[in-house]
Length: 564
Image 1 (cartoon, one colour):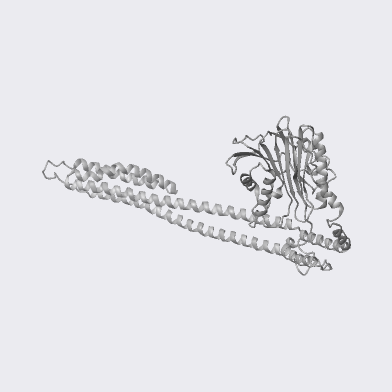
Image 2: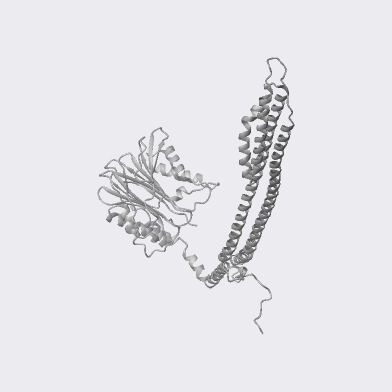
């Protein structure tokens, strides 16, 4: 016996051996080939139709020229006959006018007949007949005696011979017109054929598109929609607590792979349910270890005379903060600030934040610049999972030289604020500048300090961050913040943004740093209507006269998170 055949035949395209990507690629290729073929046919048909219409228009124009030429011949014959009868030269005006136009019309008719594809010899025959008639006309003009002033016409002559010549000329013109009429009929048939062909091609293209759409819908329904609907029902059952729910593994290979992953997840949940419950209980953030971690993330409070720092940290609702900032005294005149935002919340992010805090502070003391400190720390992240990353702003202020040096690892733009009316020229290609008018009418210029390198992550280990310097003398301050401030959203989903920060600075001013930070946080709270999902940290650094303590007592605020 031969091999057994399936009773139900299934096209290979729907078989389980082809991935969804391959099926879509096959359908897309077939559709593309069909569309290219249809497009080529439509293009060819449209061009043929256009050529037929042009030829039809050329034929109609040639007929009009032939009729115009015949009218001029009639003018010549009429003028000659009037002169023969009356002897009055006034009657020769039509004859004379036609003489000036006939050569041009004859040449035009010959060109137009040539464009239609008809024989130009027909026009030559017309011109030959006209030449013979003109020879007769000139002879008759010579025979007609001139009338004396006020006297009778000397005489008239028979025009029978001229009539025969003119009838011949009419016949030649009629032959040209008949040929053009026949050509016009052929071209009309061609136009009709092309229009019919275009309709057929368009209907065929619509049919191809319809087949492609229906085929694609059937393919998506059989390969994706129906299997995912079954998988969704099973997933909802698992989510509701039915860990014995059946997971269907049908559809395209990609969907079957997804179903297998869901099945594996359900099996893992079933096997590790007890251990997961214990892990959840262990993560309750009220133990002494979490309190110690929170205290370790507080700023160290190191200070340098001539620099005033005020900070505020509001953790996201009920979780450990992923934000931190710290101040570092590098030497007697150099002061450093590190502001960071680790992705995520909770113990893992907090531990990573604590590691970065100490690593960056140590690197900043030993490195030559903020960029070098970021580069050094990035090389130490080889043991960190790739999904952990942070945005970091590192800066130093040298009170002896009055220079601020900063490097930013993907951190939101800080604002360098100067109490003057001059729009400072940016030193970095991406820096933007602007002017503000404070509530008291005094001007305040600002520079937005953009990132000088990528996010701090194991993926970019060893990256070299650029350093940018700015003048930082008395009357200059810097406002830095994390993205939790900018991304507070209102009921319409619109972010708080840098523009709102600038408006708050205009309304509040920079003289009272704690008041400014409180005003920005309050504006962000009023703007956002939902529970805060991200930490909000702000730091204000100001250059003051030497001898003034660096970090104002009690001004470095860190609001403790409220745990659920």
